Image 1 (cartoon, helix red, strand yellow):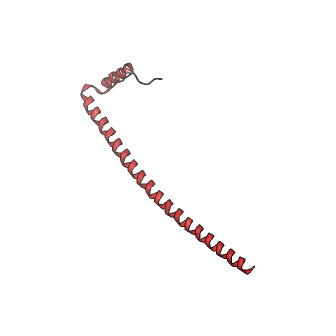
Image 2 (cartoon, helix red, strand yellow):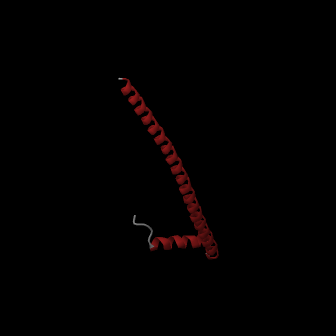
Image 3 (cartoon, one colour):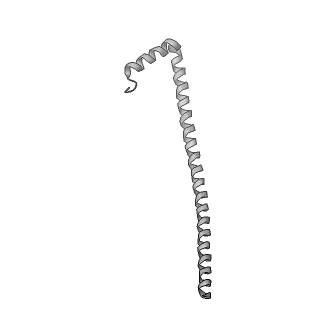
Length: 90
């Protein structure tokens, strides 16, 4: 289970030549190369889009946390003011 070695690749190549013939090999190679290029292009595009979505999500999360922090600060301030008023009453 170490992978595909030279003998295995030679057997696969012989089978391909038997099935498709020598004349079709350049066409098959070109199609395979084109497919690999398209795959790389699409994966790169998807990575960029995912990074942009992640960045947008991070900025939304940061603004939500900032708003929550302000709300908490306001609540603490209100509680302190109420406590001071009650202390003055006593």
